[in-house]
Image 1: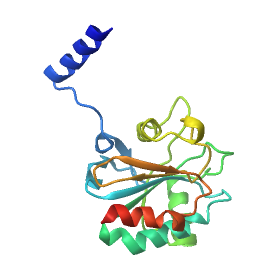
Image 2: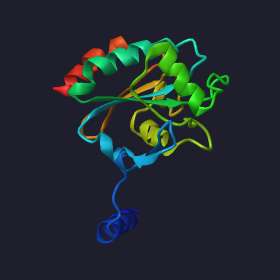
Image 3: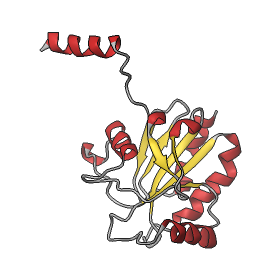
Image 4: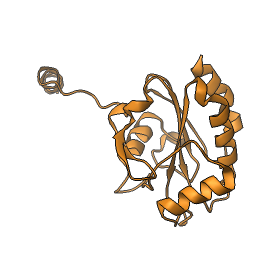
Length: 178
């Protein structure tokens, strides 16, 4: 077994395979543009699965306040709509964008709808869940507005429950922006 592990590590080293990091992951913004998260290098990221018809939807307001207060200091908030929890995000990307803009003045980065659990889990959420387990070590995202805080080097620092208000994360964000 030990020899097999050494062989695998040697193969990876010799043939240039690198460990995936968060910046290698492709995403699609709310307007359909595909790119990697590389543009967020050297920024603190708060990644949130969002929904327009959820009891936590009012958290958009708190997320936007954090964006307004800290985006010029290196904070990037990334909202990923998800319809996996009681179909609470049924709209199209255009409808989601209009809802967020009209109701909460959202200016932080929004993305196309994705799955955060199950067979079609987006690569970003596979990565986030592998690097920050939930309560009792579970992988599954429990509900809308689960939040992940990522440092400037792309390391997943913490996972926050849906009930955690954005204002409760502010001190953690500030410490990473320094």
